[in-house]
Amino acid sequence: MSSCDSADLCIGDDITGDTDGDGVCDSVDLCTGDDNTGDTDGDGVCDDDDPCPLDDLDDSDADGSCNSVDLCTGDDNTGDTDSDGVCDDLDRCAGGDDGLDTDGDLAIDFCDNCPDDDNPNQADADGDEAGDICDNCPFDAPDDSDDDGVCDSDDACIGGDDTLDADADGTPNACDNCPTLANPAQTDADGDLAGDACDACPIDANDDGDGDGSCDSDDTCPGFDDTRDADDDHIPDGCDMCDGDDESGDNDQDLTCADLDCDDSDPLIAEACSSTDTGSSANPPGKSTEAGCGCATGPDMPIAWFLLLPVLYLRAVRRDCR
Image 1 (cartoon, helix red, strand yellow):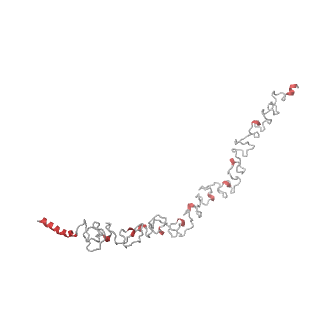
Image 2 (tube, rainbow, N blue to C red):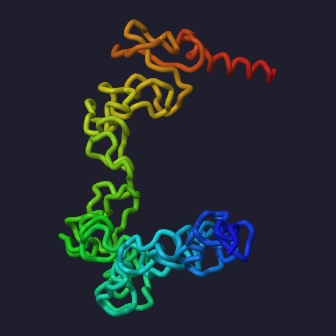
Image 3 (cartoon, rainbow, N blue to C red):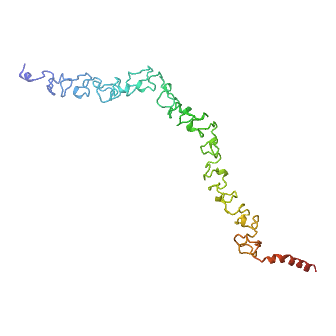
């Protein structure tokens, strides 16, 4: 052996020796570089360049976790979040234990809308997350909202107890417009929510608006007390323009009460004379009780003129005949 060979680390097959200093001559070093392990997992990638040097498949599901440390090799990187032994990407009921299926319908209890009743199709007609097979009200999402034992779809009075019907007319108290008086038809002519059978004023929505004991539809003087009639003329004081001194009011509507009007049937007839008039004035104001007080039509004129009119007429006729 020459002196040179004694200094050569790798005799015969290279001139570089062991460039990566891993104790393996370059000529036989699988991975010339900075390691001395070569390709541990035999995947053809040197350990120093292999992201998963212990996995020949490296990260087969590309989730960032090498197969050797990936809890759930597949298509997720979260593993088994519900700790049921089933990886999330294969878990039939995320959040629940896939091993629990009490009714054996293949729907995991945690995700089963009827966990104690076999219902493989998980039908839920009203979408309330309670399966039809175990839903007392399968067609009502709120089921029995008023807790009276009757499903809303069959409830005669939603919001009230269907079992309470004091008058036994078929309408529960809470929805009965006459709860203590039987009225199966629930007729309410005036729409005031009080049934005709128990409504004191069945055709008046406001009933007795002025509280005088007379329904509005029969009220002689709406807004006033019909029972107050000081002069007994059958016109309530509130609507009587001649309150207290007449029996018939103002029949001819000339704004003069009948007991002060010379002719209460003709608005053109002059009204009563004053107490100081002797009968000469045609239309003085006031009430007269004196004998001889007269009434006349037209403007003021002495009564004598009315006495002379026939005489003057006869003279005019005779003059025309000559």
